[in-house]
Structures are given as structure tokens and as C-alpha cells.
Length: 438
Image 1: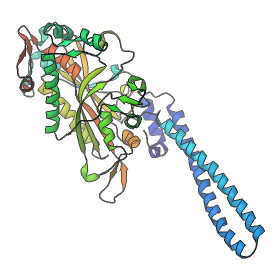
Image 2: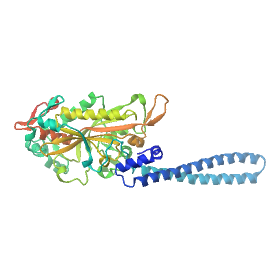
Image 3: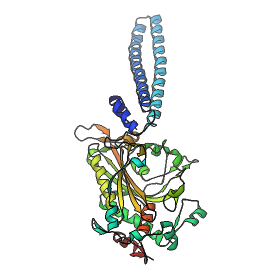
Image 4: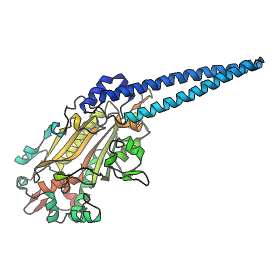
């Protein structure tokens, strides 16, 4: 959540940032935060004065008793009792103000960086890079050349999955319901190959692999901002009050909840493969065909904890890492800088990676790489201890998909179909043990 220091010292910048995210009632919400803070500080000041006065009066009681002035001592005792009673009321007021403050701050999103463009929807996002034309023309991109037959692709991935017996969507409906596909044979091997490829690439880039739980408690959901913002999109185990994770970002980032990290240990770089669960309530239409939108899917996530002055460099490195994966998978892709209105509740800046589906004639999002600035870390109480003066300050957190598998699989199948079968990208062949799916 936003820090109180930022709100009080840079009120107008915060309001402008919230308006860029199209947060309704931005000014009213910030003014309310400032007013609650004023009431809290006023209660604290009066409380401190009362406690100081009560201490002074208490010291007089003993002296009065020694002088035999019992009646005067009793009067002072009554004054002390009254001050203590008032102090209890002030403490209660202060605690209620703090509670109200936290509840309100949890409803206010992060503010975007200045370079985030204006806009309300995905239509307003800025394409900062695309290799689609090069792919279609068969030009070499990096150290690879795309499949020259990609322009002749006809079948969407759900038909290819059936043709080659890779994924059984109907069996998933029988076992669980829509959005829970069953991978089999070479389809299952392709999933495992991608997971291992992504993890190996992350480890080679210096990320420590984590194998976290796939259910988290309320505090973890709150720490990374899924709660209360996305409560309706998470699967909730009500008996135990636990949540199935929507992404490995949640458990991995929460490793550092209530932790002070030595500056010398930053940046922290973690990666994790997990199953992810999303209710995707309200989804319908062409976006949910096949692997386009699932309730359960596999994903490799990269997470960083960093100092404020280095987090933007970390973000660039994460973007380069994800782009490198797509290049090695020989997929046509583009990178978008999200506008204010299309950013997530918690991000300060976010880039999306999309791969092109030649069969569906549309772009499929496969990764979001975000810098949250201090927003998550403030909720997590994750701090950095500086070497120079041993003081602490709020850390920065970042995360990105590297990568989410369903739409990667869809794009691989659709963009690599040939009359002989589905071609496996060279980088993936050692993991698959074959160069074609026939």
C-alpha cells in the first residue's frame, strides 16, 4: 500500500497518479487518509501529554502522604485516575484511527510511474517492440529463423491437440469441469519440457529455485495485494481459511514478509514453478477456447527484492530475460507498456509480453513483468538495512511470468504446424527428446 509519508508529503502527485489509473474518488480518498492521520496524531499528542501529567502527579502522591496531607493526596489520586481513564479513551481512538487508516489504504491502488502512458483500456497500451514482421518474412531474429510455413497455419491449437492426442479438454470437464484440461502423451511431455526449460534458464540467470506451497493464508494474500482486491477471483478453502494461489508470486514474495534484509544481500532473485488457480469469474466467448483461459495452469515465476535505487535496472533485466525465452522458443512476440487504466492494482509499471497466434489471428498474453516499487513491501513490512548508517527503509519488489505455459503451448502448436507434424523449437528439443510431434 502507499506509504503515509508519500501521501502527506506529495499529495498532489499521488492524486494525479491515482487519476491516471482511473481510480474513482482519488482526491476524496487521499483527503480522508490525511484527515484520519490528523485525528490519529492528535490523539497521540494528547495521550502523551496525559501520560506525562499523570506521571508528574503520581510523583506528588508519595510526598503529600509523607507530609500527612492525606486529603490532598486523595485528590491527586483522583486526578491521576481521571487522566488514566481519558488516556484509555484516547488509546482506543488512536487504535480505531489506525484500523480505519489501514482499511482505507488497502482500497487505494499503487500510483504509476511518470513514464506510464495515459489510457483506460488495453486498446490504449503502447507497443514498444514487435518482431512479427520479421517472423512473417522469415528474417533471422537473434540467432534463429521462424518456421517459413507459419503463414499457412490453419488449425487452432484445440484441434491440433485433438489431432495429435495431446490434450483432452472433454476428459478435464468429466473429472473437474471446464478450464481444467488433461495433458497426455507428448502433450504432457511438452508441459514438462517447458517447465524444465524455463527453470534451467532462470537458474542460469542467477535465480534461486523455490518450491513453495500452492495454498496460502490470508496474511500472505494481503501482503502481495491479492486480498482484498482479488478475493472473488481466488479459490477459497473456507474450512481452513486458506487460498489456492493465483501465481507463485504470492508465496515466494511472502518469504520476505516481516523480514529486514541486509543491503549486501540484494538483489534477491527467486524463481518457482507452481500450479496456479484462478476462478476467472465472468470470462466467456472466444477468449476461453482451448488453452486461452484456464482455471488451473502451470507457470514459472521470477521474483526479485531490491533496493529502491536499483529496482528499475532489475526490471530491465527481467524484461530481457523473458524476451530471451521467447526468442529461444522461436515465437513471434510483442512487448506492450500498459497504460494507467490497464495496470494491475499493485503495480507501478508493467510490461506485457504477447505471442501471436497465426491460426487464431490474435495476440495471446503470456507474461506480465511488473515493478511494484514500495507498494507490496510496505504491506509485507519488508525492509532493507543500509550498510552505511544501519538505518532501514522499505524495499522494492518485482515479479514476472517466465513463463505461463497454456498460451505458450497454444502458440507453439499453432505457429509450428507443418504437413509432417508440429515442429519443436531447437532449444526445446533436448527436453522433449524429439524434433517433431507426429
